[in-house]
Image 1 (cartoon, rainbow, N blue to C red):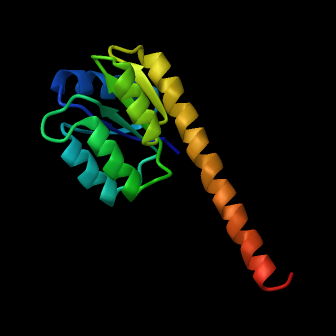
Image 2 (cartoon, one colour):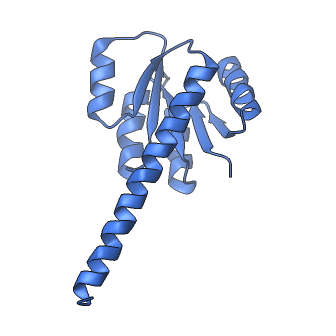
Length: 142
């Protein structure tokens, strides 16, 4: 099963190229060109990993991150930025970003980060399932 990745970036050529490179590495990639579109599609589709550009028109990546984490708190979000600032990185991490990478980033590095983020999500989901099972067993006295 392919890892489902959403990429939100307003640079059309960048996301087209990145999507092709990730698809060649066997990821299922969906692209959108705004933070609003990322939020809208995240409400409908359960992605394994979301990649957000920090600088986008209308709603930026940090604000999109806040809303996406409300919708789907376990989905890891990797932030990308061309203008790396410590403040943005700190704010993104406080809001739950899985990682923060500077553009342009090597496709192989991003691919590894996606795999790490996916593994992290899977581990968290498994812990939650185990806790739910233990809770059911405890409430039934088993």
